[in-house]
Image (cartoon, rainbow, N blue to C red; front, side, top):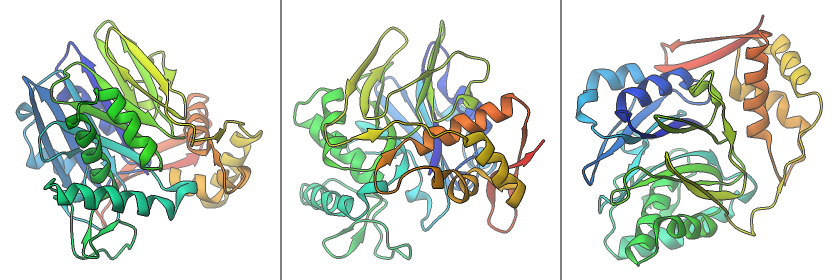
Length: 336
């Protein structure tokens, strides 16, 4: 899982995204860091393996102009800078950030990603994340040789459908219907400034709009004090300061949106056993047991909402620090 935020509006995107991104870094992320902005028909991108502190040392925020952009922090795992988000397609048309996991589609996505990835390679689309080694064993292996990050295949598939004449939202809808994964992604198009396109298959996505623009994130902690809108599971859409369009994503995604009782109690009981604990541990060792296995249920959304409510009620305390052994920015919770 990862954390991200996106913005489009009147203000420079990069400083805002860096500030808001740091507020949620470490919740379910904190190892890889990246940003992309759009200005004057060009996408500017910088990403690396490292925390936001490392990112600040390598990149100059002034090199990311524009009022539309994406920020992303990824969990640990195999990979160098090329495995970080955002993924910018080799034609320079599309940038994508995503968070999620195969979920109930584990096993199935590999086939679709390999099919599309090999087709795109044959048409000379480039994949900088392609490596011959993959100790994790979880990435699609193209032509029996190249392990490519799934999100880079997704981004490039969006760009491919767009290059074939589809409008941006249709290209997003088509791609995320073809490549199944329990994920939430945001996409910007070089030729469509001022617009954020998204797809959500059973993850947490919230949006907040004011007079200056609109921001999206996986959690309302990215914009404290603002009124937020939870975007539907199994949906895609376009958000701009002036307009919001939301469509059903696909009939293949059936989500049981029932929220079990007792999540706050389970969260606190889990903390009592293993505190301090990260959000991933609290979810995996506590909250997941409340949800049925083998079906799509709103576990990620429930985890975020429960955490946010407990923080608001001051029943838990969050502290973010650096794991010096792995250089990982990690937020841990304790009972208040």
